[in-house]
Image (cartoon, rainbow, N blue to C red; front, top):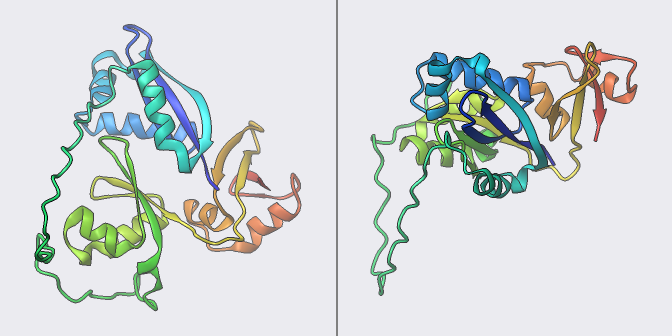
Length: 245
């Protein structure tokens, strides 16, 4: 099971705050916000970065949780701190159930569905379409899980043919269509792993499995990380000593 972090970003000049969550290392999450500010994001936090200067802000970890309860814990911390920079989310009204339901209308796509054009990057046996994935909205910070890449493509873009872009983003922890994507492995025998920076000797990265770590570092050689995991503190991979746990 992957671990997630609830963190606080504080404006040292005004005392205004932002509360967020991530499954990445803190330094990577910090770099992500700085990059969003440079790209002229309209989020209140990123506007404040440009107005006051990044040097007038600080980030600190509030707590760690399993990623399965990360969103509910985030809401609790937001309720506690009432951060000024968090986007205001207006809940959608609960739809009124009409009885009787005569017939379900077919789903309307934003563009007409077409046959998927396979290429060397997405060619396979079709099993990747059943991968469980998670998308984090880059504007609101909210996460949503999907049972397949196709399901995510239809929900986010209205076009099932967008699945290849989302799949590539999920495999490499990249952004696509306004979301940051990651693969959620569903193997009972997977073991969480974490990496200790060789220079700082601090735990900086955590992943729900060895394969998730390999994808995050764009690696393709399992033997090297396996060697590090089987010989804790003796062999490294990608600048880290690797451990199970």
